[in-house]
Image 1 (cartoon, helix red, strand yellow):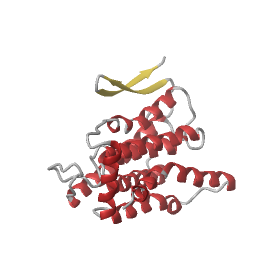
Image 2 (cartoon, rainbow, N blue to C red):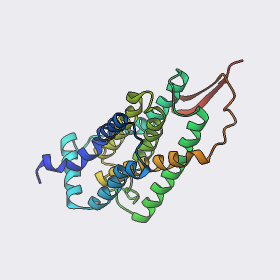
Image 3 (cartoon, one colour):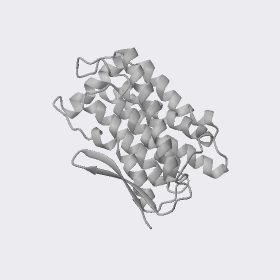
Image 4 (cartoon, helix red, strand yellow):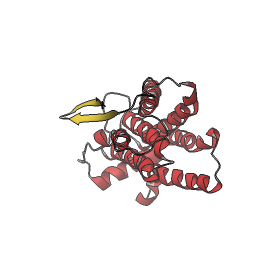
Length: 246
């Protein structure tokens, strides 16, 4: 198999942002909101397509080509950090007053629900499939990728909150999520099907959370002014900073 042909699945993952951009540009032109079924086409296709190539010779050949390209000793843990970038972007945008779809508490609520659901699906599938990682590790939890589903879930929330007011910010999350998936493959931690399916899970779960969001209206901070909610990252410690201005 030639190297250039084995990169076709990887290009599918890398094209997620551009496909979303084309679809939403059309939405703005015709001033008509897409239905949930239309929004579900892309993530469902990723889940089905990734599942079909899982364990195939195409996938094994692709992984071999990637490792030959980057070097068999390649290891760079950028994916441990890029998966968090969409979260940091969202709260930083809130802190700087960028207009969003929802109140910061509703954002946090939707993000928490989406992460819990996508993590549950991801780790259930890991236990059911028992797929070995390409690096030959003893833990049979390769399919799907937890890093990637987490990254695309975060990116999906960022997209939902800012697509109507700050498109560049909204799409930047998907760039970070795609980078996360790419480095999972380059680091030999996951197969290409693992990250493609995970991307689909993250996007689809987020779409579902925002579809049913109107049902969950509880927000104790809706009428409270002067509150800032900012993520804190310092010396490998993660948390949140809550500030009330009087």
